[in-house]
Image 1: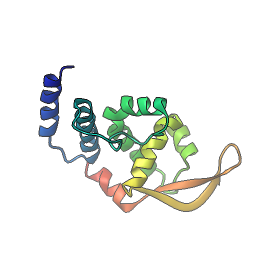
Image 2: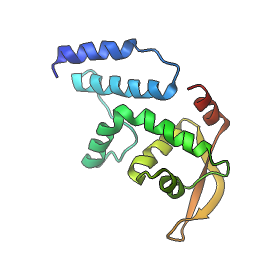
Image 3: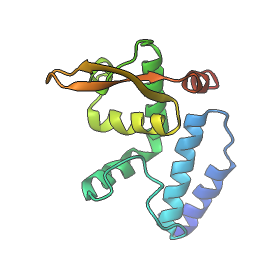
Length: 146
């Protein structure tokens, strides 16, 4: 894509207004990726959570970035249906989602204050203790605003 075309796409994305914070996050990520590609932005804070030292993890984060907000909203909505909370393993199993897709979403939700460590631990299939994540009042409100 030419810089001129990317500039037009960038302008179009910047004109979008939405009250849906997850869509807004996805649009923001797309804008940041375009700006980075155009050469206006340096640094590494514009991708979904990933392992910065790994080129394959970075490539995966770049490929998922445009739909990351939608997937994250689905993870939050799913966690909201379990008032007792879920471990990462339980949530991955009940959602039918791989850990490498689920965990960055949960980390993002945690960073936003939408999910927290409940203080409870449950055993994984490997018989190891795992954090039970629960949705905060802010997390429930974020879904209601959608």
